[in-house]
Length: 72
Image 1 (cartoon, rainbow, N blue to C red):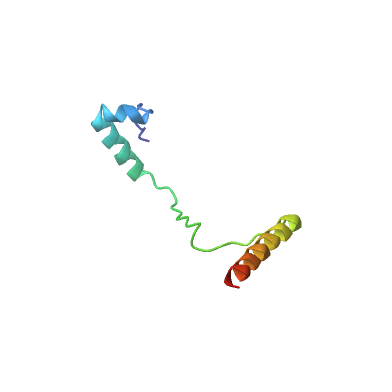
Image 2: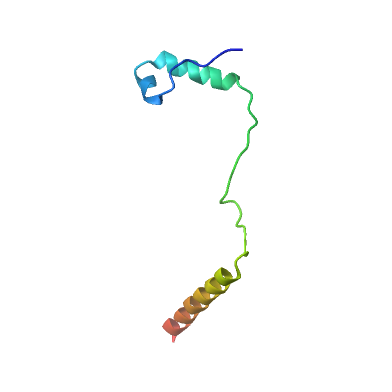
């Protein structure tokens, strides 16, 4: 089993580019499962807290009333 270089502090790779290249090569050889996370792709509604849900509804209703008053 190959081991990564002993250089563990990333700022030291600026002084020794060959160590950085060795770490990149080692990382590319390791077969880790890939997982793509896109948290902004879809909105997830969680309403576990009923008080928070009521507060959110009140704030949104107040904002809607303010918009209606501005139009008049």
